[in-house]
Image 1 (cartoon, one colour):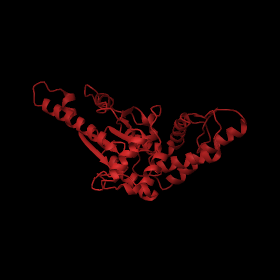
Image 2 (cartoon, helix red, strand yellow; image 1 turned 90 degrees about the horizontal axis):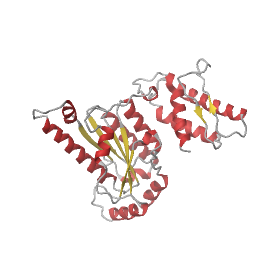
Image 3 (cartoon, helix red, strand yellow; image 1 turned 90 degrees about the vertical axis):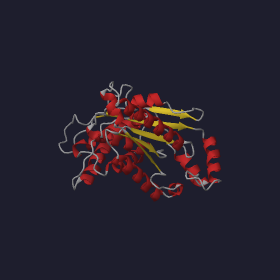
Length: 316
């Protein structure tokens, strides 16, 4: 597909930037289509001409701003966006995911969906200051006829408080392009090159075994997911008990089914600051929730969890 994940504060201008991206990509695709009618047509021109661009947003999904005022409705809204994006996974489709995308765990989930499809992804962060967003939201609220109306004040402030800004060092937020308020357009050429390539050569991403989607999980999948991730947590706690007061450290994960060291699971590098049991369990619950639909092969649960934890610890 390639996947473009648009992120930013509420009322920061995400949809405006997303539409600019859609128009730019559609023009490039149309131009490539016109070149295919000439005698100088290349294979890359023909491939680009086959591309389609899809814009997935709250508006296209029929979601109102009020869904963000209710935890369950917001969760259902994210699930609807993810399902819409996942349905469009194709080597001939470019998908612009124009939601708030303010939760790093959800951006990770989108990243995994793209990687499982062997296609690149990137994050476009709309860097509009909070004060400017607050003013824009007030104007939108004053104009109830607008399709992209504003957020109620309490919802707006809550979303600002909960926003987890993308970090380019995180693999799921990379490559990261920041578009400032005064920028006339996003960096079209750089984004196109990151996803498509200036020569139109198809860019593919090798799916890691931890991100390969499985269509039908086994009946014991949830039990295995819960048990194996808890074994990783137990290994961390055992290491901390054996090394009291030590900062950092590396934990070698052992396969739950064989109790032998496994090459499939990389070593877990602990952060330099101590991590508590509640923190570890919170991270485990996040990972389980992200993968409870059967997105991991059972044999890759430990490895996938360790890689995810390493990514979380890198930014802590």
